[in-house]
Length: 113
Figure 1 (cartoon, rainbow, N blue to C red):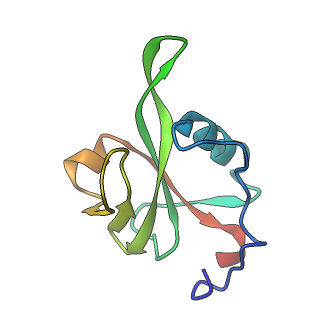
Figure 2: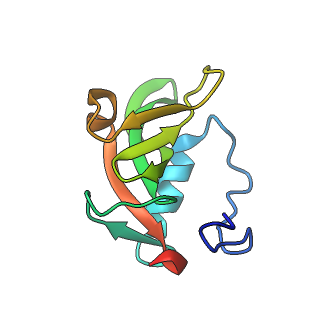
């Protein structure tokens, strides 16, 4: 964060959102688009931008698909993220089929715009 010029005080706290409550993270990001998170056109991404992705989750006993996962751009075209059950992070191209089918949008913290 320091390399990006941000401190922990600049970033929103998602207190009360557990690691298996990704839907709430997606809702918080959507609620703050244009306030904290600025939409970035694909191809103009840079390190520290956030990538919002879709995934599956259970709601009231029913499987659903929604915006539940975040990755971070490490260099243009490449993101890092961690999947549930994995022992480490995964770096994938934004054009990788796994990301293509899950991609929602790229967002930049307003202080980095």
